[in-house]
Image (cartoon, rainbow, N blue to C red; front, side, top):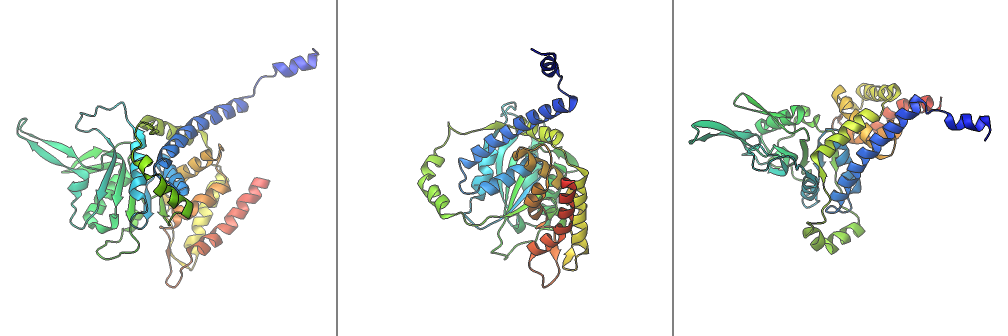
Length: 352
C-alpha cells in the first residue's frame, strides 16, 4: 500500500460532513414517523393522498386545517383515522384530564362556549367545583361546520387555536402540545351560517377544497368498506411523543435560507401592492408557513427548503387570506403574477 493510499484512508471526516450525516439521520427518523402516520390514515382514507400529505404537514408544523367540502366526502373519516393513529401510552386513562385521541364537535347556532371548552361542576362530596374538560381536550379535534356557530363560540375557538389554551371563569387551562384542529365548512349551503372572522381564518395554516375522488378510488371505497370497517389489530399507530419528536427534529435539521425568506416577503409585498387585491396576507401567515416548508422539504428528502416547497404550499397558505377586489375572480393568476419576480430572483440566486 502506498503512502498516498494510506493518507487517503486516514483522512478524517470534516465537521461539515459530520453535521450533514447527523442532519440526514434526524430527518430520516422524523420522516419515518410521518410515513407510518400516513400509512395509518391511508388504511381508512382512499384516493386522498394529497389531502393526507397536507394534513400531516400542518400537524407537524403545529398548524390547523380548514376543509371546504360537501357532505360525505370523508372529512370525518380522515380526522378520526388521524386521531386514532396517535396513541399516548404514557397517560393514565382514569385521570379526569386524560387527553383523548379524537373528538368531534358538531357546531350549531345554539352551541355555547362551555360546550366546547368545558365547565366547572360542583362535587357535593368534596364541596368544591371541579373543571370538567370539554371536547377541545384531544389530540385531533374535528370542528364540523364551524361557520354554523355563534361568534362567542368562534372566539373560544380562536383562543384555543392561537394560544393552545381555554379560559373558563377567569381560569386558564392548557391544551395538549399536539392539539390539532381539522375544521370544515360547507360551501354549498349558506343559510344559517356565520362567516368566519378574518383573525380566525388567519389561524388556519391551510384551506383545502376536497373534490370528488377519481373513479378507481371510489370503486376501492365500495370494495373494501368491510375490511376497513373491521380493521382493528392491524391498525398502524405512532405515539404522541414520536410526533412531537418529528416536529422537533425537522425544525432543527431543515434549514431555511435568507433568500427563501426574502422571496416570501417580496411575494407578500407584491400582493399588497396589487390593485386586484383588496386585502393582502399578514406577516403571521409567512411565519406560520416556515415550519410547513420545512416539513415539505423533509418529506422530499431534503435538509433545506427550496422554491419547489414554496410553489407547493403558497396557494394553500394564502388562498383563504387574500381578499380580491370586486370583479376579480381568478386568485391563481394573481398569485402567479405576484410570485413570478421573486421566484425568478430565487432561481438566479440558486444558479449563482
